[in-house]
Image 1 (cartoon, one colour):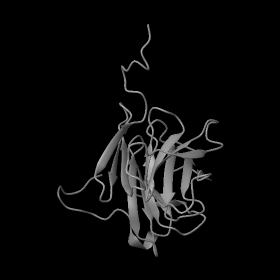
Image 2 (cartoon, rainbow, N blue to C red):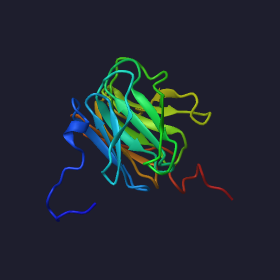
Image 3 (tube, rainbow, N blue to C red):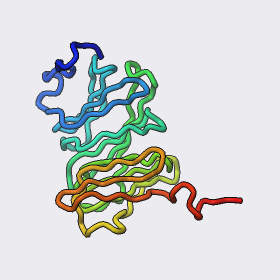
Length: 205
């Protein structure tokens, strides 16, 4: 975007999201498409931060807690919304690489994610297709699909972490698979989400 260096300028008019307030944002770098999630669960998209339009509203008007673009397939976006039951994690798919022409198909992938937990952050596994992680108020869960996204299942992914850790942020390194978790009052942790490159478990020959 253009503008005077060091001077902020508004790119998403407040009237477009009323009565919602923007809580989360991210960018699809491959198409320069901006995303914004609001307190009423709406997700908006704007090419280069302009011409915004609403692309998603969840089944309940719960606030968006995270938005993550799949770097291996930027047409896929994962969205989490606040709540302890019901639909809390969604997989969105743009129908076109051109954001001005795209329709968005949404799918709840909450599936068997346990109730009474709130998803606060998401991370996409760049080494294993159809695999994401959800940081919650009671630890980390891994969501996977073995049939190209049709059916999803969730399992706890907390080996080595304190019990019921409140996880506030997750980041996965796209090359090494190392994931780091920032927690509330329990410090930070990291884990290899796959066997480290060069380990005996993946050696051949």
